[in-house]
Image (cartoon, rainbow, N blue to C red):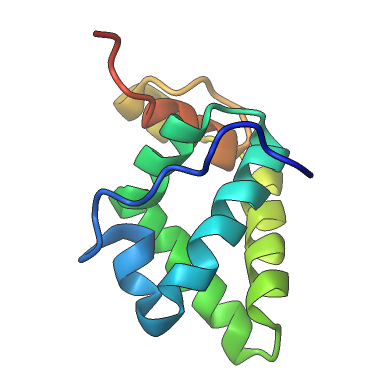
Length: 118
């Protein structure tokens, strides 16, 4: 898929998705941004905020786990994206975070991490 807008860079090189991916971070970042954008349809700035957050770290942990099971980086990112799209926001998370109950986890957390309106 061709993009008319550039993929935003991380604002959190030490933690979140980027920091967790270590030496693979520069390759993993655009793959994750693209996979999540394609799956959720959410704005790139929201996806960057998600990946830079503690939820991005959890996403990276799952990617690395899938790599340890033998998947390539790209396949692990795609599998993790699909896994987060299949899981849904539960009642407790909905009440605590204000994310609509039953929404796919990936959509819910990306929306939760949306930048505040200026």
